[in-house]
Length: 311
Ligand code: SF4
Image 1 (cartoon, rainbow, N blue to C red):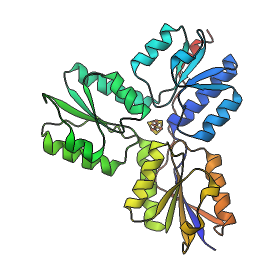
Image 2: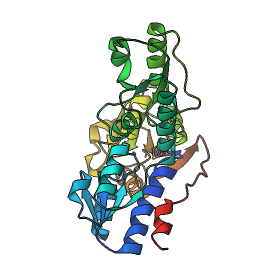
Image 3: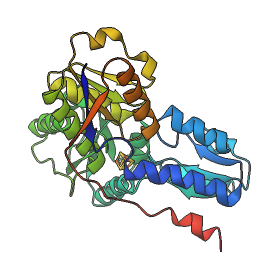
């Protein structure tokens, strides 16, 4: 019989919990349908459950009928999206995580001071698209080390780097070092952009990599922070896989494995973690103990638009 080490904290962060609760509360207050732009959080199960409750997921605001209630997802949006929603007379509830909003504020402030912003992140990710929109024309997306090596700036002046909130800490440090080698005056952000939840889950993945033979990360394939956890565990020298569906756990992964490490991305619900633990128990890993790397008590207040609608 093998055993499981479960990282704590893992699973939902404060920003995801707030976004999900926002949609639930909007549905309770206004009734279905409530429209949600893009995936409220990057997890298929969460999206399906909210769809069953009456949420309608759209790609863009022009799919929402005039006067409809629209929830903006946790990853944040460019101001142009809010303007478009206002232009259609939508009642908008902004579920952008406050820690993403903080990065938007930094981008606007530095752009206002005449800086160019080197935003380290995935150019295709909704969060990065939203942050670029906060300071358009001043923000240059740097995608990994290769992006840092190939970035071309026509007139490099005052420069500051900012980051997508869910990046891997160690990779980001390497990208910053590369950028600083090329642009020595590069300024650091005023505070960590990589959020507490991503950092804690990465610390947990590192711990699991040290203490286990295999790391399973519960999360959706399009969850950026979950993907980083797989990379962090592998960087620690331990095989690691992303698991969305417990049935997809491959028996070959478990061959010769005594201790399986389990963690979950910030958008993975507790039910998904429980389903993976149940599957592991059925495959000979019934004993679960927890390895705690941090305590999290953070909670964000709900968007004020929800209470303003009541007035
Ligand atoms: Fe907010 Fe961090 Fe959670 Fe993203 S991962 S929603 S930035 S707390």
